[in-house]
Length: 590
Image (cartoon, rainbow, N blue to C red):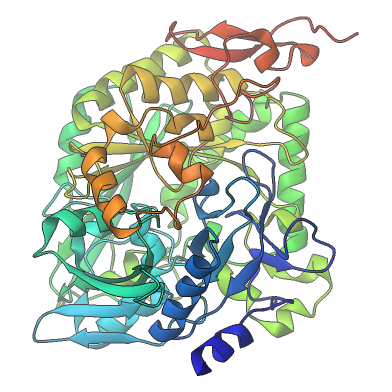
């Protein structure tokens, strides 16, 4: 009874400002609260994610009580973190007329235990990545691989397959360093509707399903990672000509333990991050503070977005091609966020402890700062992609292909540029093609081969999923990766249509679904979206008018594009099997 009262006390009708991606207000219809996505804005299908209730457990018993409430009352349930959710609707519990409930881990973040004897670190589900690695470092240990953004929770990081970059050791996937988990799963009425199960790497069948679970097995309560004695890293990016990149790529990918690459095809350059482990005795107190993740004034975020919107409206290739060069040069000349002594950049290499160089963030804390939140809206500090501040809003395409196929992909991109030298300028302005490497995974929903994740950003309209100025190029690149090279979409990013038919792309989806049926036989942690992604029921694609620009389909008819604006469904310019929305000289508007 006490637990029930305590839990109900954490049901909020008015979410604090710190919970910026969850909005609860009397003005929201069809559900008491609404969940927003990573950009704090609309989902790819432009439909809201409304939920009946939000729970904020602070301990494992309260988490068990929250799951029990959902199961007892036959609600679908999803777990979300404080700052960041997926780009796609994995985090939304909606299923037909059942709005479902959310469990936020934002207040379940009090435990981080470093066990020096077993060389492990245990953390509550809501602990942030930055706190985890800082606590481990205080005891002299390092978590070898993490994602590059430290605003994630530890449970969310592993559940979606977040990764760094490496083909050494266990590779770049953070989930490969998991050695234990505690998960709250549905249970019978006799068991109280919810119970805790403990999984370890000594039970590979269930554990390899839980390494990357999309949250459909249950609510992660705690995670345990293997750690290593602390080490330093030496980082020295270098810009190089891309004339022979297709011949050199595999060697470059394997050469540096933590290396990655930004390729700027329109500039004919790539920036190789030479990033290697060095002894802790090496001199250096470097840190990584990437500008794109630091707080910016809301007014500045809006100005940058408005410049982008004007360039899109006029199809200003000069604007994008000039800025592509600026973006590329900044990767080396300005230090790209690397500071030699924690406060200034004096040149590469930058040497520092692993936890200071492996991940970065900062803007997420502005949403917890009450002084900041009391400022006029234009003066507040925000993340540059804050939708409410009219910041950057775009598509995040992240698709992995076999390492052995990257050279051929590079040739395809060069062939596109041979036809249109300005084709890649907009993508290069947003950072180019980011190439990171991950080894074949033990996770059933993970990679079945050594891969390179190819990631890029593209413009998206705020008001509707209309075609962007360079729509055809974005769609052709996406389809080359997906179809020509049988690419696997990152499970926490990407446009909806990319998840069609992923069964053959995972290591073993059938085994994953077997474990899911054992842990959550009635599917309380599943939703319309997750069932469609996993091939259980429904579809992630649409055939409605205008479905292609929003990523809800690959066009097969002109109506899937925007014929009234002159965008028709055509073959790709290099990959002829692609079907892309191409701007023509006329429109069908009447």
